[in-house]
Length: 155
Image 1 (cartoon, rainbow, N blue to C red):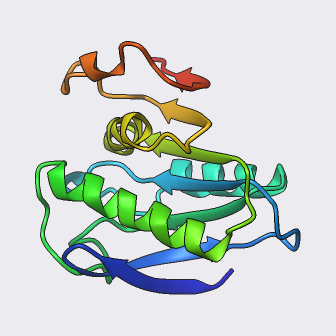
Image 2: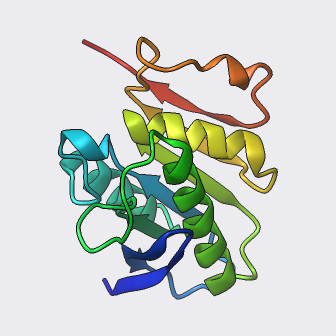
């Protein structure tokens, strides 16, 4: 799976891109947990989401938010990270012009960012939100939610 570097709002963003052979395969981006608490694109939940999407026939991109790994920039309280996610989606779409379906998935902080992206990008047709931190962030922006998806939470 190729390592990719693509432009973000504050410089380069580091990612892993896993394309399918089919030119019209659905696409998905996978977002990692909180950067200030050790979250990276290599977190086991993010890694497993990435491969689950790939095994279901999706072309997948996971990446590090600004200031994580080889991604440039500094943590920005979720505001800049949402811009990073939008840049990642732009990059993925530019590589897959024929795709008709687009999903976003995230774990914890990444779930919060992913749900915000979902509300701003009408081309997103589905989502997976793993352990969204509803006790830490306001999710009232989701009413009404424009796409179907899966929310996974537990103790």
